[in-house]
Length: 397
Picture 1 (cartoon, rainbow, N blue to C red):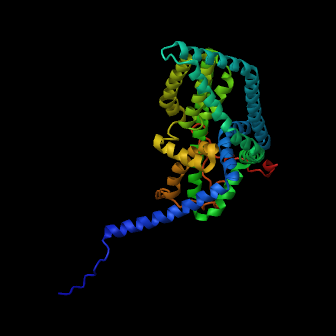
Picture 2: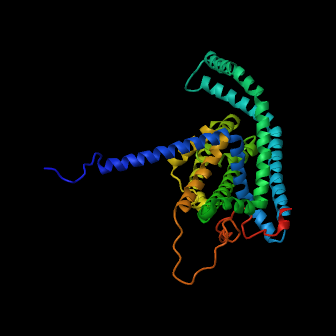
Picture 3: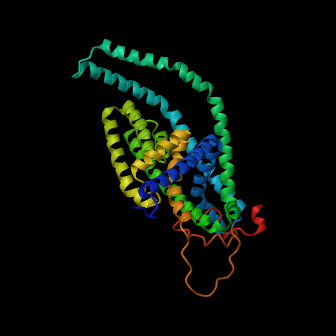
């Protein structure tokens, strides 16, 4: 008996799954080509990403100087000079301490090596001196085998140094103009989105708030971490304690992996200079301090700006490291946090206005008033040079 009911060749569940799979394939292709483009433009993308992090860190000083009545150009120059002075002073301190204490480190390492050798011979292992000598010779042979690779690395260091110098120049220029004209750059950027400008503006402000919280909180936590471990190393009498403290500070910007790397180097230096007992004490203090940082300092200072699971952090770090090395690993986590916070604001529609009198005509997208109210300074740093500031033409001098 025939019926008019159409025959369904594909079950509804399978049709929905096919549609989702097609959407995921299209998104994957777009993401793949986008990542490939970023990887090819890493010479430009990495300095710009680091400049955004630096701007989020330095903008509170620039904003304070502007609020005190200083013109944007002067406030920006003072901010940049203060940052360069801090970096130069830190570099001088590290270099001076390293030059002064390195010979002492070599002597202490040699003394520790002799003590370990005597313990291996007279201790419970009762090794023979010939065995120890053979182990040392094997290590020396391995080092000599890598001499060719080390030499080739040194030969290519000139090109790497040129690229690093060019990246630093680009980083300084981008940071300077973001601090000085960030509001004008953002307004110009919004004009290209037409009716989507309000959504993009909300997403951009959410991203900037997240980035500011992350950078300023991470710098504070890293400073506490570096100071505490530097005091511990100096109290133990470990040579090169100042360079090691600076290394721990910078390594703290790379979650999980960075502190493991810096802590390993500091432990090896402590082991070579002071022996295994001091090394074990340092490792214990490092573990306790790291746990306090993860469970006390990070939640209090950074807050919920970066509420990622450790597995997500490891995956993000891996992707960033594969694409751009150490610098990519350093910026991967804040970039992921910014995307995670900005996407909901970009996708969701704004709430409907309550019934009432007809509002005034909206300003053109990208104008100062269309950018919305500035977020309050204590809760989060607004975009560099918020739209309500610097409307006078003379500010761009």
